Image (cartoon, rainbow, N blue to C red):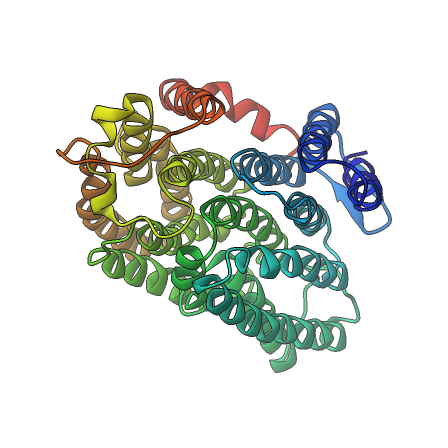
Length: 429
């Protein structure tokens, strides 16, 4: 039902958008995304299969996060061009399809369906955005080609296009490696992360929010289907995790621009989330994704009210004095990303770190703990900057204040009562 709602809405609004006012198109896109979320809640816990389409608990939870990111991206963006809202709708359709299939060729189609709109959205503001979009496009095309080659090798080695099919031999190992590269690019695992800092910084801030939340949720759903426990790909995954948590945190230490800082932060978080792949703990990864999407989405939602272009940390000074709701929201999101109790980021890290311990990955676990402590430097710099004296030029809309207040409330609620969500995530796993 969710796939039908999103695809029918995208096709219908593509035709109606030529004749409707931009504001009406925006409202209809928001309505379509909301109906898609309601359809997900209706189907939650009960597997729905149709051909290569599989709506299970993993697909439902990650697609819901992608829809949440899309709602933020549409609601917070001011534009006089209706194409923006349709591109977001098409991108989230690709994200839902990527999260809802085990077929590698369908995954490839879904990756392209979500990527092509994002290439256009990254260049929305022209200027620096064109450079960011070009880098994203070229590296994305290379990653897709490697994924396709890996899919062909996977079929040759196993006789199946279904992810998770057991195999053996060098061709099978190479296939898993290439598929891991393609998906590692989407979640920004090092060393396939080089696009993310420039693209996050050059894209409009609501688009960056969408990339940091929806894309990561859908791609991790695909990784959970490809990289199963006892898979030969886990050996290579350990190296990617180590590189991600090291490079993401160390490179973030010297950043003076908020969007670029959060880009390197997202690389580190991709490494932390990947720890849950060792045991195939979909519930732990889904909960981490939920905490990450809430905190990161909240941070970018606030930054979008400061500027849709670059946001130097110096521009955040005085934010709490002028807009207490926004200043406090940004500070709390930074503390959650850091993983301090009682914020939900702590519980997310606790769950995936526990899975790494169950798998006996004590070296990676120790590295993750140490680098998580290092991240305190730049997260506190971001969170405390809003309390410093300064003059911030900002006139947020009433809707933005309401969204920030609601997201902050859910962030605190999830931190104090994580048990409210865990049973729902566990349904169907």
